[in-house]
Amino acid sequence: MSIANLRRNAMEKKTSVKESQKLNQRFFTKHLNNKVHPIGLHRRSSSSSSISSLSQNSNDSSLTDSLTLLDENISFGLHLISPRGIREHAVANDVQQQTSPKINEPGELKRCNWITKNSDKAYIEFHDECWGTPTYDDKKLFELLAMSGLLIDYNWTEILKRKEILREVFAGFDPNAVAKMEEKEIMEIASNKALLLADCRVRCIVDNAKCIMKIVREYGSFSSYIWGYVNHKPVINRFKYPRNVPLRSPKAEAISKDLIKRGFRFLGPVIVYSFMQAAGLTIDHLLDCYRHSECVSLAERPWRHI
Image (cartoon, rainbow, N blue to C red):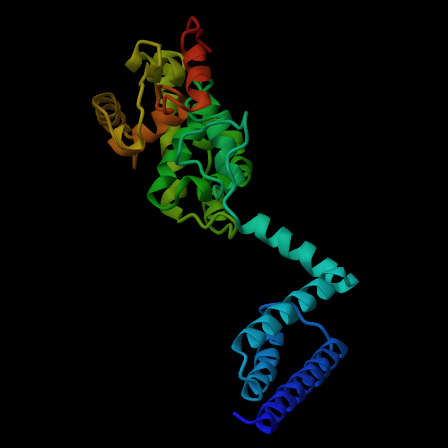
């Protein structure tokens, strides 16, 4: 190769380097003067089109990759230190914390696993304060019997949301007062849009109240009659899994059969067993539920007739 050719190659390389430096300077000046957008949004598309045009004028692919990474890092850094960027970054962290699965905090109460974080507040309170607690008061027993009967049409959550209205229209579930309700009062309750009870359900509750009053005259109280089926001591079950909890039991079948014989309506074995669970005649809290030990402690107290 001649000396002239060597000089010509050297001059071309020098010119190429200068042109690359000028182009590089124009590129950063152009993009740093533009509005900065978060990485991952539409800023990436405009940047990639600019880089694409740059790569056509350069044979150095490593330079293109370096410019792309540097451009993204500078854009992201400038966005974060701007007031708007700080706010958006904080909001993004809050959203991530809210949507990410939460681990149970130490000391959090362990409940039966059909109680979830999505369960309604009324249902959770029912589990924590009533379900499985031995109940001896006639009014409370009548209330739980009536609400259990509504499971034919509704679930516990829907029923418990109507609890206060039910207490109001049914005279605090005083069986003596409900037994005396006449047709006009029955139709008024059936027409209550907040309850959405068919008139046959209202009549059922009234008729069952009349049957309870017959039992009161015979046994002294409905409590004495119903608790006699379990020898006045709750049946304590020690179930570990939900699948172990039955829908009915021999005791529930015996009680249902006798109640229907006495004129009670809509009280099959499954409904009766739900009533027994709610009233604490049987304790079906799972073993690892904090309420299991509490209800067992209540069950082991000497029975007192009320």
